[in-house]
Amino acid sequence: MENLRLKPMEERQFPTLMSWLPDREQCQQWGGPDFRFPFEQRSFLEDCRWPELPSYALQDSSGDVLAFGQYYQHLGRCHLSRLIVTPNHRGAGLGRALVALLAQTGAIALGATECSLFVLRTNLVARNLYEKLGFVGAAYPGQREWLEQCDFMIAPSKAFLQKQKTK
Image (cartoon, rainbow, N blue to C red; front, side):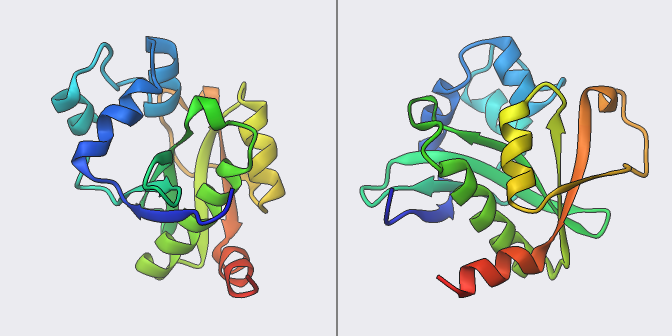
């Protein structure tokens, strides 16, 4: 897919994102154990902390939302979160584009030299993608109730910045 752009998510676009999360299991895999389901737009926006967190949509040339992600500063890094690709375009390279563009955008905005994320241990497709993009497993320096289900991964932000400069 060509002509992909990472643009700030607009409130009017959230119903599209909400449609990608049809059940409690998928919603909580994406949003975390405290994300409410069933949701309605108000609770969804509250739980994903929009517009408090930088929230981005990967869009095609016609403006259709194909993927979504957020970033914030965590432990001195640009932490990527709530990454998702529309179900009918998975496997087409959109996850790679989303993570690379979001990491670049967030690292520049935050002045971060590293990026981080959590991945569910059962999500082997996502883990494989993150590893191909340069993320490696790391010890998490804290405790979270749900951490036994996830792995913490980090990557140098310069890898994303260099890739974008060569394109």
